[in-house]
Length: 330
Ligand SMILES: NC(=O)c1ccc[n+]([C@@H]2O[C@H](COP(=O)([O-])OP(=O)(O)OC[C@H]3O[C@@H](n4cnc5c(N)ncnc54)[C@H](OP(=O)(O)O)[C@@H]3O)[C@@H](O)[C@H]2O)c1
Image 1 (cartoon, rainbow, N blue to C red):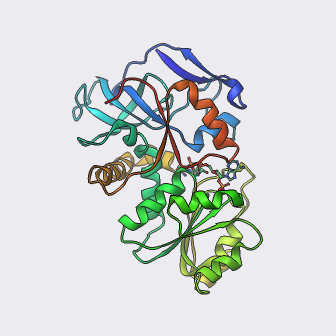
Image 2: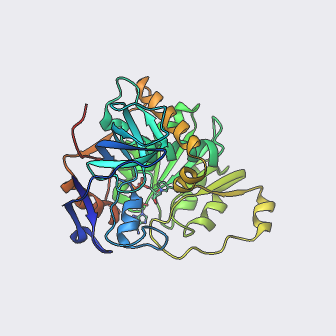
């Protein structure tokens, strides 16, 4: 079978499509004929060789897939061969056949195309869990999202109205991405420059924001805390730039301001509490099935097109969510 293989740390020059042996499912696992694979920034962090990502080379990327169940491992009762599913594979999802734990494999409702479904088990589930679990979003909250025009950023903009509505502010790394963030659903979209703090204060009539979703390591954390309203929360959930993570601010800063800093890891939750990720995935699939959620996607026609799209993400030039066609689909 064919699969995307990253041969060494670096860029697209080290990504190839190669023939690899077909895997078979072990106990509690399913084999899935992959129709589509979602691209995520974690692929780029692994490709760069960021500490804590990937477990050596060659590396087979892909943590988000849709497809049909090909085979069941021992002890899997809830799924049937031929079921349309999404899953968080055990890596190597950008392959014609992938292996996933049954616990993180979720049926796709009738009428939801596998193309759209492929964005749900990592990207959309993360976006929902950032808001609901980690961020304790309440209707009416003002939510500030860094990297607003990307995959997670555009999904959050669509989910906030479905969770009761709130006020959205997006930030982007370059001024030319402001228009993309606006198109993604941010009525207020701001470049992350020296004027950001003042612009956010103006946009919130001096009140500050209730929730900040921050995938920028700790580079923006001091600013985040300055921008929070009393009771405000920051969720740290990424380190796109790969910079060293700094120590957290003194506890007194949090106590004095009634502030919360929390963290979120999809990978950690899949390992420790897969049912919570599966429940979030089912919920976003339900939104799609009901016609409430339609995330704009860029479809890549084949495995061979993934490395160039990874380049776009690596250079901060990606727009929205990318999904690659891998095998047959319906
Ligand atoms: N914790 C989790 O479980 C979890 C799950 C999914 C995603 N994430 C994180 O959430 C973020 C968004 O993920 P995504 O897949 O939707 O990616 P994405 O937002 O489509 O692309 C990554 C974005 O990171 C920003 N960025 C900041 N510094 C960068 C740098 N040095 N190089 C490249 N990009 C840089 C860019 O936006 P701006 O220039 O506008 O800032 C870029 O568009 C990523 O940081 C990812 O690691 C975390």
